[in-house]
Length: 149
View 1 (cartoon, rainbow, N blue to C red):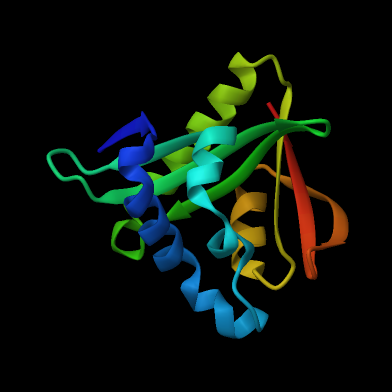
View 2: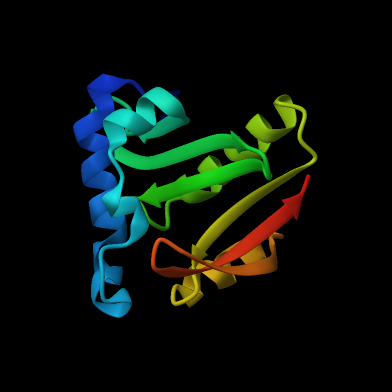
């Protein structure tokens, strides 16, 4: 598996990966999860996007979206296609996010997830992230988590 900076050639693969990774939350949330609402052509222009690709195959196994905000270094989205889950793709993408934050001069990284996505909250806490805020944004209840690097 290779992780590369994404370009417009990856757009369809990014959209497919995100849809596959998040579609099972739609019923639980009662709406499309926020990552499925994004315009990824615009995201590619405005944020740092990386893709995990199977060697020799163009399928996108994982997507990582990063951004610098007034609040700090944001892990804006991480998605792993169901067929690639359990293969270390997510861990490698998280490690890359942390490396990028450090390289940009940040001492922490933050993210948010829907309050109802408890398995994500548990995963991030196991990876060293700590919950620090609850916010209602775009009609969604979000929990914010931060990790010191």
